[in-house]
Amino acid sequence: MSNLANQLVLAEREDVARGIRLLLASPLISARIAPETFDLVRRRREPIAKWFDYYCGWSLVIEPRLGYARLMKVRARADASRPARRERSGNAPFDRRRYTLLCLVAAELLATPVTTIGLLADRVTQATLTDPLIDTFDTSQRAERMAYVDVLRMLESFGALEVADGETESFVGSATAKALYRVDATLVMRLLAAPNGPSQFAVPGEEVAVRFEELLSALRRERRYGEAPEAAHAVDGASDVQRGLWVRHSIFRRLVDDPVVYRADLSPGELAYLTSPAGRQLIRRAAEQGGFVLEERAEGVLLVDPDGLATDGMFPDDSSNAKVAALLLLDLITASKGGVVPEQLSAEADRLLGEFPRWAKAYRGEDGREQLVHDALAVLDEFGLVRRSGEVVVALPAASRYAVTEVKSAEAS
Image (cartoon, rainbow, N blue to C red):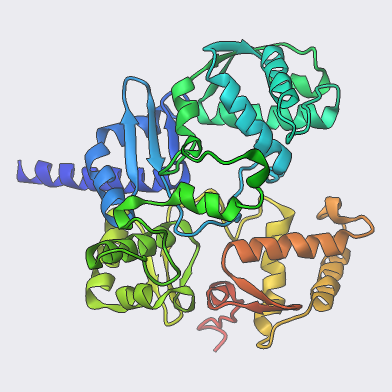
């Protein structure tokens, strides 16, 4: 009986750790899209919800009858490093037009439980006609239809839209293509993970661009830390308890959201917490409960998921030419203590393209090598491996994890 109890405890720990990491990668889980993942999170909802609430200050909403789980993630810092991506080869990030269409489509979907791709497009067109600040949606243009389809396919991936008949992709080829959808309005409303809804701020449309940073901060403001927004190193107008809560949550949010947390990037309060005995013990405990491997170095800290569940991006990874080039160019960058300049990287990219003539065919054009360098550096920057100082690209400490080393066998010696 004791052995059985131990096995059950171990099984629960493994389930909780797996559920935590799966939610980090996919904060919105639909029972229809991922039934096994949803069932796991539903069964272990209490310990998983407690982990996120205590360490990160994030709430987990699970609706078994409606069939979805939503982790309300609020980033420690607002940035554009994790854009929405298109559900097609290349996974290119959404541009401004696609974000605009996403908001318009989501608003129109709330009005009906069933719609067609054509009727929905007509409603979006009418909405843009009445708003002087938005370009009119024109389905006669292929680029517009493609952007529209990218939005719909992303909503399908979340479970907010279900194709009952037809195929969404066919609309790219023709505006007369047919597709019938079932709409999950509840999931559409759950897409926005912000403590404060945009409808709370009565701002004239022409002022949005000028006051964008102010409005973004207001959307993300969490009153549990005090009435005033967070400053760089403290929470203005907050009590010591609220400030301590913010420091703890900000540290853990960065640990689970960022590839690496460098001590040099932390505020004095965050650094003091991270290096304190209590803080370090808490980080080790959180890593163990979440199934992570904790790496502590002099320069910073990172959580490694040995199963690769907790992230939507991997490195190293041969899934794209840019990631392959990033790994190859990283050798050149790490070999130079003072960093490298774009000309050196372009020369190395040119050498790689010449050495592997059948590789990276998309980068064989006139500006191919410059574009390859640009895309590779974007990958390295995303994973916290390089920093750009003017025209010089310098390797950050985490880049040493991928350094090439020479290993001598016992036979050779």
